[in-house]
Length: 187
Image 1 (cartoon, rainbow, N blue to C red):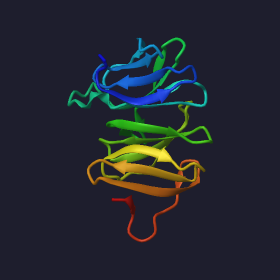
Image 2: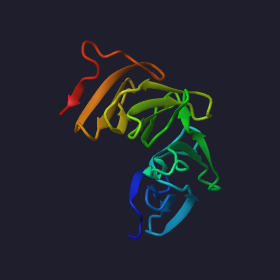
Image 3: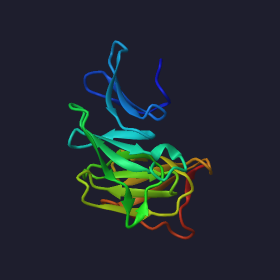
C-alpha cells in the first residue's frame, strides 16, 4: 500500500523487494515485514530496474514523459548501500534517450534496454564506456528479456501487442532478420 505506480520489481537475497515508483520518482525497498524505505529519490519517472554485475541497481528513467525539455530519459546507476546515484546515459550517438522503459543484463556484463518513446532498443556497458543502438526502428518497445542460454533477445511491443525475438551473435550484436525486417514471435 501507499506506493506510487510501482514497476520493475527485483527480489533480493535477503527476501526484500526493490521497486521503482514511476509517479513517486524513487527506488524503494520493501522488507519482508512490509515496511518500506526509500533507497534513492531519483526524480522524474523511474521505470524498469535490474541489479548489475557490480551490485548496483540500474534504472531506466523515462524522464517523467512530460513536454518539459528539462525532463529527459536516462539510465541511472544506484548504490544500494548508500543511495548514491548518477546518470549513466542520456543519449546515444547524439540521439537523446526519450523514455527508457525496461532493462536486462547479459552474462557478458552488458545490458539491453528498451526506449518506448524513442522506438529503439539499446545495448550498453555498466561503466558508462559504450552504448549502441542495434534496433533503431521498433514500434513502442516495452518489456525485454533473454533466453535461458542468453542467445536470444525477446522484446514486447505495446502498440502492436506482439513479442519479437532475435538471435544474439556477440555482445550487443543481433543477427539480421531474414526477409522482411523484424518478425513477430507471438501475436
